[in-house]
Image 1 (cartoon, rainbow, N blue to C red):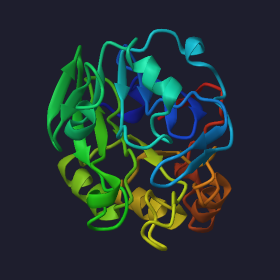
Image 2: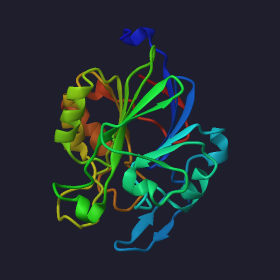
Image 3: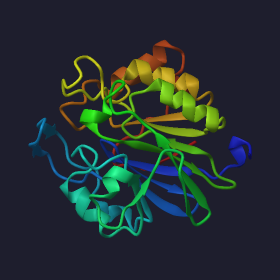
Image 4: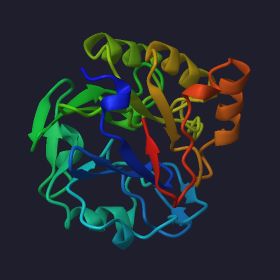
Length: 256
């Protein structure tokens, strides 16, 4: 593993919510595409999108791979995001979600997929408390590795610090972690959140040792019950603010 200063920098742009575009080992990567304007999404639980994308999908150029946590919730794949998938050569997601997306590749936890020089490993995630899968469905995170590049963790909609611990045991050197935070909560599991909150994001950061923490999934939807500012404050009070790289929507920045 190269030292951090010798590694290739990752250029990242926060589109909004869970949607981040970043470059990695020559690949153009997009997480959970959400490009709709504000609106209401009816379903078992009605979701309300409060803000549109900071940039349109067309501003990102060609996408090589989409890393999709899951497709069953509009705050991770809205209508415009779903339409975009038909233009992308590779979408990696859960086996369950791949059944509902033409051409998508479904991965089981710990299964690997090679894309050029990059190895992408699906890693476990839990969208709520223990047993949440019955209502929330299967979700996944991802690890990206390539020679001369940082090891990157994309958490997906994961609320479990214990799963982060299991991932860190298998990948002891994680350099950059995109953590889906925001304490998403629709009341389905009472006070138990569907994603990391400020406190559990800090706990996950401690598990991830020296990784740069890039918080996403913290604005733009009504059911995101904590602001990004609260997460930043939590890290500041714990003396860990130096670990954060907070992206301003629509502005590209180096992370890692």
